[in-house]
Amino acid sequence: MLADLVRILVALGLPAVMLAQGSTVEGRQLLYLVQRPGLLARSLLAAVVAVPLIALLVGWLLRPEPTVRVGLAVLAACPVAPLMIIKVRKATGGADYVAALHLTLAVLSIVTTPLALALLSRALGFQAEIRPLAVAGQVARSVLLPFGLGVAARTWTPDFAARVRRPVAVIGGSALLVAIVILLAATWRLLLAMDLRSYLAMGVMLLAALAVGELLGGGSPTQRAALALESAARNPGLALLIATLNFDRRRSLAVLLPYLIVSVTLVSVYTRWRVRRLAAA
Image (cartoon, rainbow, N blue to C red; front, top):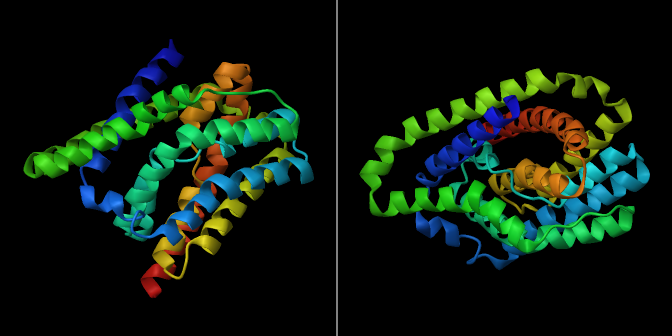
C-alpha cells in the first residue's frame, strides 16, 4: 500500500515540477550547446564517459561489497537527475547552458545508458541490460514530455505559463516531499545496514564526478559549476528501472537510498561553496 502511494505521488509530482521548470525556459536556450561544439564535447566527456570510468575505478580500487559495486555502476550509466536542473540553475544562474545540457543528456541517455551499462557489466563481472526503448520511455515520462510542454507553454502562452508556474511547482514539490518522507520512514534501516566502505565508495564517486565537471567546464565559473552538478547527478528512476528488470528490487533500494542521501549531502555542500565563490567573484 505504501509503495503504491509513493509511486502515485512521484508519478504526479515529478512531471508537475518538470513542467513548471520547463515553463521558465525559452526555446532558443535549448540551442546553446549546438552553437558551442567544444563545450558540448567536454560536457559529454564529463557526464557520460568520465563518470562511468570513475565508477569502474571505484569498483576496482575500493572494492565495496558486490551489491554496492553493481549499484554504483548502474547509477553511473544513468545521467540526468530530473530535478537537478532546479538546483543547478539556483546555484549557477546559467540558464541557457543548464537547460541545453539537461535536455541533451536526457536525449542521448537513450543510447548512452544501454552502452555504458553493457560495458560496465562486462568489466565488473555482472549481468544487466536495458533496451533503448525502455530508457526512452522513462526519460520521456520524467524529463522530456513535461519539460517540453513547459517550454511550449512559455513560447505560445507566456502569460498563462507565468500564472500557473508557481502553483504547479508547489503542488509537485509537495507531492515529492511527502513521497520522500514516506520512503525514508519505511526504509531507514537500510541506511544503518550499509557499511562504511560502501559509503566511502559512494562519496569518492560523487566527489570525483564533481571534480571532473569543474575540470572540463571551461573558463567560466558558472559553466564549471553547472557541469560539475550535472556530472554528479544520476537518474534514480532510470537506475531503479534497470535494477527492477535485472535484480531484486529490495536489494536495489538498499543501495539507491543510501546513495541518494550521500548525493544530496555532498551536492548541497558543494552548491553552498560554489554560490559563495560566485557571489565573491
